[in-house]
Length: 98
Image 1 (cartoon, helix red, strand yellow):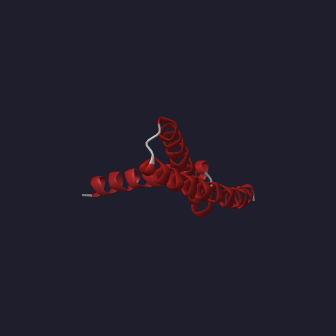
Image 2 (cartoon, rainbow, N blue to C red; image 1 turned 180 degrees about the vertical axis):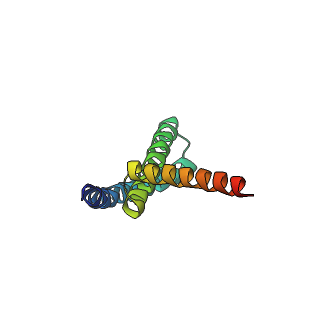
Image 3 (cartoon, rainbow, N blue to C red; image 1 turned 60 degrees about the horizontal axis):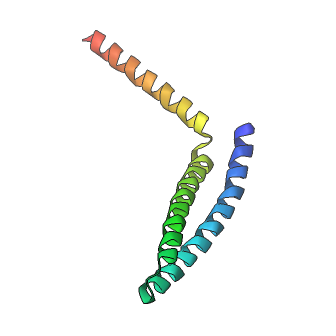
């Protein structure tokens, strides 16, 4: 039940992140246009900061999508660790049966 609530929360936050991302990317496009017409160190600084923010938003978006698709990070790691133990055990048994 807790994982389902996290997925719903992640979906809601994802919508917010995507809206912020769209706004930031639109602003960056405007700044690139301004920069191409008039080289200004202030615009270059704002572009760098905006690009860093966009990168963080993309990372958060990917993380939210993963949470929606596969569950919380803890749940994913638990599954991966269990699969790794299973694989090691299967290899051990196959190696000993020969």
